[in-house]
Amino acid sequence: MLGLQFETTTSWAEIAKDNLQQILTDHAFLEQKAASNAVSIIINYSEETELVKEMSNIAIEEMQHFKMVHLLMVKRGMVLGREQKNDYAIRLQKFFHKTKDRTNALVQRLLVAALIEARSCERFKVFSENMEDEELCKFYNNLMISEANHYTTFLKFARAYQDRKIVDEKWNSLLAFEAEMMKERGNLAKIHG
Picture 1: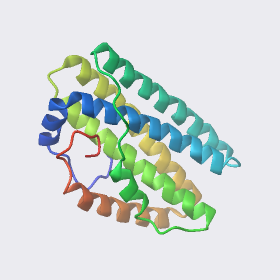
Picture 2: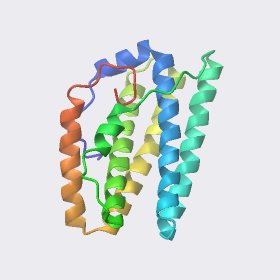
Picture 3: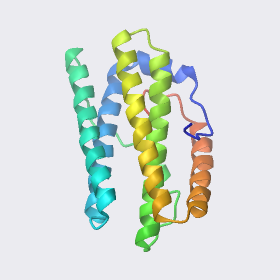
Picture 4: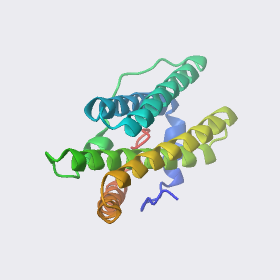
């Protein structure tokens, strides 16, 4: 369904389970960054009414997810750690050449956001399916559904702003790049690590 070309192994879930505070801290900040990205799209493309509506919904939902993760941490006696750079997102953002064409820049940004959401969805699925902790299993299963919806929203808008064939070529290239990148990951207690 997600079109990802590399599957996360269950060994990553074991690393994540053994470093629960780290994975939850990373996850909390990723939700915050996702909300910030949606707000940034609103600011930069404020004339796109339908896009603004959807990005508003995503920004609110992502901040709700941040709050949910944080409350889960507090409930378990954890403190939100310090934010760490997300080298996964940084590398994806560098995949496309910078462009002064606003539409092209928007499509590229939407595709990167779609892929980040797709990978998050896939990781949440792996995590929830390899978790003995029933509360966390249910928590990540519910979030997985939400991330899948965000993924389809970003991809839908990318395809609406440019010819479908061109967008799909860009998408497939980005997927292939990400799959190669993921082959060297999976050893850190980070959602995209």
